[in-house]
Length: 84
Image 1 (cartoon, rainbow, N blue to C red):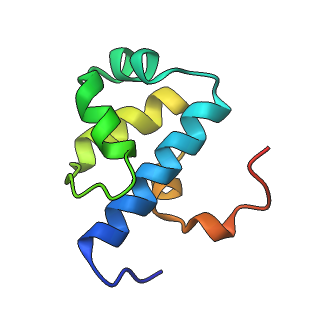
Image 2: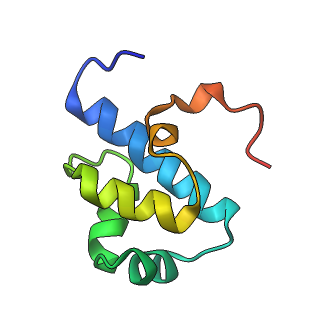
């Protein structure tokens, strides 16, 4: 996978986090609390057009809460069979 710029990368990460959060039936508040990050930070990560950098440590915390491998956050959205 190749990302032309950081904004494209952050968009894919944010979209995937939102996808897995919704799949786990968690609200942003619940995920933020369990991952020990602020709600506003999670909201910015998930926002369309996000330019917020995310540390590997935070991605790992989120992945652990969602029970997914961290590399799932880097897959382009089109690789999903379906969202539901």
